[in-house]
Image (cartoon, rainbow, N blue to C red; front, side, top):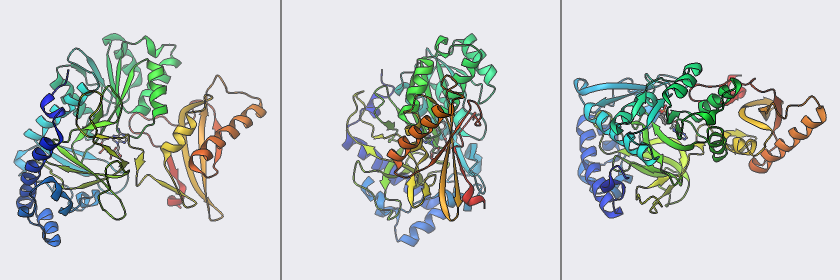
Length: 433
Ligand code: DLL
């Protein structure tokens, strides 16, 4: 069953017409309601009448997270405050949070698209969804919550953390769907095993995992541990929250709800649009939002787009799994390294657990990357020779992927920190100095 066949299976030309119409409306809205955008457009010499179709999107100015911070808290809102019914905020690691606002219509659309994405993943009104994303200013919990209710499913608003309770409710309520970060899913599996509970014994059949990058290897681990199907859901608070895109049952890229969010891929250096299929920075223009419409918002997420029709019958454009962000990219001795590359190397090795930490430091003016990884208790040995050999294999697997040498430290199981929300896997001591 397809939730909204008219939209999800729309022919490309028709989708372009719909997007063009909505883009013009949005440009008018921000030009006349938001001084920030009026100024930016005037600086570029672009006026609402210059935007006639979706192809004209390249004439529009970009928006960055910094722009939202500079206009903290509500400076870029396009609706009067009395029409804003909810705000969320993303914490960010530095500076002020970025605040986002929703009108009643925005919330209705958000719920609708999250319901749609849950349906992509085969979730239906008969399901029991345990929502273990954080509730509060973070969009994960409430975003999935409203979408789950819109779908008609039963939602369990347990929020993140409280692992003991999570396990108890999954058992007692027979939850069929779990929604949380992929790192927390692994932590849940591990905590159950510790208590002698087989995660496979639960009634779970689907996991809706996102809010942080994760690899195919991680998907396999999670699917095997729980015996479920794990789907990738993507979103960001500035654009809406979870549900901007999600995988369908074909698991061949994340369908973007492009009747609301128009994607582009740009070269982050030249800011030029890249040809179809090429990898670069993902940029979104929202075309139905009222509270906080954004023109060409630079997500910093790196991916590529695929406009081919999917096996599932949907024509909605697909984005590939995000491999990382242009700004969590580490530069080690001049080489660009993404944490996800290290993760995929580690997870190819049976003896290690999917818990790792990357420490970057500078010793004698030279960058060093230390990879700390937990060894599976089954393989943990007091024979130094065995551990040395394992260490060598891990180093080789990493060097084969990233091309530079790293130092590997094997640690005992459960020594690295666990996360209930987004995981933090990189400590860059070079910045702290
Ligand atoms: O993380 C919204 C969300 C909640 C998405 C629950 C999915 C599930 P923010 O806190 O604003 O919003 O963080 C957005 O997280 O720009 C990406 O860098 C990263 N991100 C989100 N989903 C994925 C994903 C939520 N599936 C930032 N894969 C984004 C990789 C993701 N990165």
